[in-house]
Image (cartoon, rainbow, N blue to C red; front, side, top):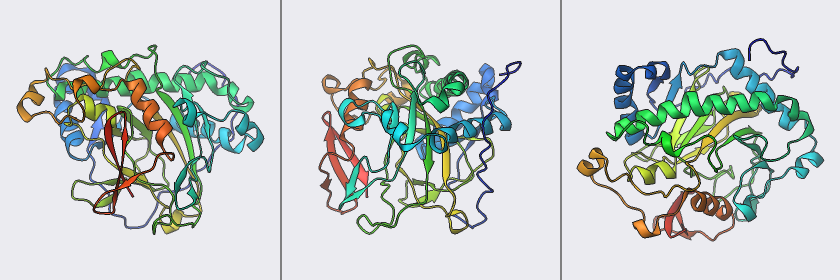
Amino acid sequence: MPGVTLPVVPQYSPGPPTSEDLEYADLAIIDISKASTPEGRAELAVTVREAMTNLGFFYVVNHGYDQAQAARITDISDVLFAGVSQEEKEMYEGTMKTTGSYQGYKLRNYWHIDGGVRDQVEHYNINRDVTKREHPQPIRPFLPEIEAFARHNHFNVLHPILRLLALGLELDEETLVNIHGYNAPGETYVTLDPKKKKNERRTNGSSSPDVPWADFGSITILWSQPVAGLQILTPNGKWKWIKHIDNALVINAGDALEFLSGGYYRATIHRVVQPPTDQRSRPRLGAFYFCLTDDTVKLLPFVDSPVLQRVGIKRRFSDEQAPSMEAWRKGRTSAYGQTELKKAIDGVVEEEVINGVLVQHYN
């Protein structure tokens, strides 16, 4: 925000990346600045299509924010946790279980995971329209920057990616952009998320109460930070780490995109585990932009796609039973930690039915 005197914010230091030898996923790196020309989009669309049909994750670089701007977003994120008392956090607690809306604080111990263990995840969620609800006093001076951050993610990252994904389906490149309006009713939001050192209570043999999941939206944008913890489940069933790249974004698909693409683009299962030994005493502080289609969009596959006509469509529900984005997000959000999960035969995958759709969780 050149020419504007910004409010002072304490600097947050995440420390250096891990030096441990981890098994990293081999993710494609997309230079999104090349998407400004038709020729660049045609080239990038091939790489993005391969990434989304294989691992469901890729990196984005040259996205328009420099390192200092990205670091300031992290500094602002820390205000919501280090600068807000527990009492004030409770005043701005979200109502996920009752309304299916993620706005506000998701406090620790909110969800029951299994065997008496409750989650240790805390985050704060802000609708892209920052005026949707009131926010804690310490963060209010920074709301213009958060709104600018949301707009940057939406127009300079999300929309270019959606054009590449549409081209990968051989559709008009505005097909997906047209159902991700910035001012349309919906729940796309900025999430600011600190993960502290895990407790050691066990859930079915795991020392972490964070269970693997797939996101329920269309695209998730994670601003990479140095403390390792994110892992993805690869097609061969192995868990691999996501490597930190300075000022890069980590992009992945969610349920909504998988439904819209007829199963062509993968909503990959991922999880957050304890950091490597040399980072275990440090918290992870992340900034995300969780993208959903407009609330009114029916999550039906684009049957006109020449690609889907060639490879076939994997339907999760009939056209008549297809949920809207609003119904799907509310169903997934309000059901988490509340419904009974049915064990599958292999004892690893747990299942539940939401809005008539079988949802699998990897324990």
